[in-house]
Length: 106
Ligand SMILES: [Zn+2]
Image (cartoon, rainbow, N blue to C red):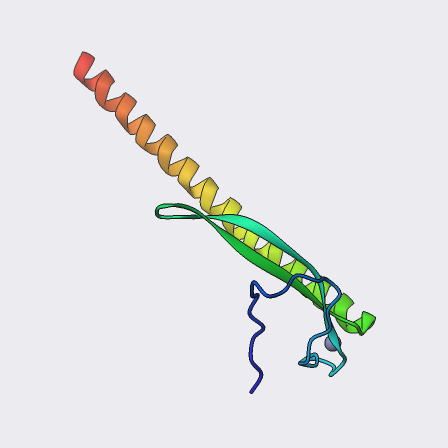
């Protein structure tokens, strides 16, 4: 079984090769970059360290990037759809409120 690589705080140097080969092609993988991001939590924010791991096999990495882009687009579409639905819901409830106040005014 392959273990998922978990970003850890020990990673300080970028361009570090991983012991674990690529699950797709078996080539070496390396850490392209690490960065820290503030992530909102219930009690404020927490600093999370992320690592971008890339495959040294360019063809494999390209495929991965394409898949990632597709995934991102899918996620973005879902987010937009959710927002649209929320907007419609708000508009509807606003209209409903207007109707009610008009009815009361008469
Ligand atoms: Zn690969």
